[in-house]
Image 1 (tube, rainbow, N blue to C red):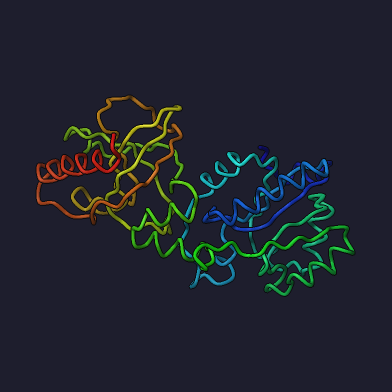
Image 2: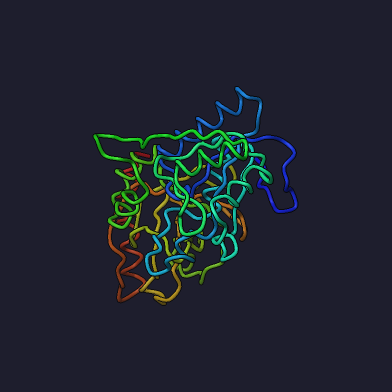
Length: 305
């Protein structure tokens, strides 16, 4: 998979493309990706996903910006796993936000060589969302882009949506999240050095810095860590570590039963399976150590490893 930059534009090859935040990367998104891959293969074109960073609402409506389900690193990793050939990450700024629907479609056609555009039924685009599906079809005729509309994917008569997944994450309902995603919820990141408290008490952790606005409920989880092509069971804490300092928000994963030396800045993926308990401040490190023992026991039972 190639992540396209400005230097790569205009593309030389024609593309089948789709546009969206792909924050949740749920079953509905996966369905759209399968469609663009099939059409691209059939018409001998390249598959292209166009996404945004940051979320457009962060600029347009900051008070109502939704929390994030994934970070950009995780999103790109998931797109790579899906076999997408090109990804273009639009830096969503004031200049881009002010493009008219016609300017936006012209950009897709001339710069990204988009000849087939696959979008959801409620897609809006251009300045203040003035463009809709009908606008896209009219402009598509002008700029040689065929528009395909995908209906919403439903399960049990309920639409699978990022909004629903955000709410479930805030409540720590990981089993339901996994069902809607069609995969285990995970966050990819780069290991950062912590304050070594875990190591001091016999439970070293791998630490990554999450997005500030991550949807996930703070607390302790059972799950797995994927590092250097190995997968290990882990107890995971997401929060401010109130027993230690209560300041910095981190995701910390203690790999169970393994004493492995992993260097800083190594990329890892942390998979969240089940919420164990709320984050809590302990009076002493010994109390924290005792609680971690209990967390490990519960995790091994839940994961059946």
